[in-house]
Amino acid sequence: MSTVGDIAHKVRSKNAGPFWLTVDVFCGTPDAFARISQGLDSADVAAALQVDPGVLKRFDLANLNVVKFSAPRPAIQGTRADRDMHGASFAVLIAELPL
Image (cartoon, rainbow, N blue to C red; front, side, top):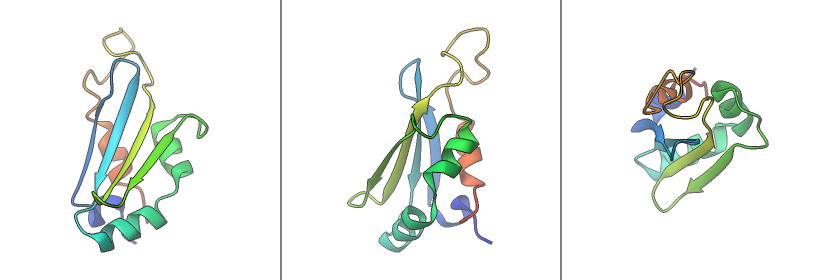
């Protein structure tokens, strides 16, 4: 079984301010975009990020071959509970999701 990371050109996560996190799945080609866009369930992404599916935002940008997710950070950036100051480690969670 393939994973998102096997098909995508790159999966990147980063802060979208101190309260939000964004994950970008750069698909590279229209075929990869179609496969990821259709096969990647938002509920699975929410579970991987440990957020309520109701607060997860999804953007399918066909003209850029990108699927983008935004979610509240599990801890506010820079607080004692924050284990990833830049939000970079969340990409791996999405890249490992099966398609």
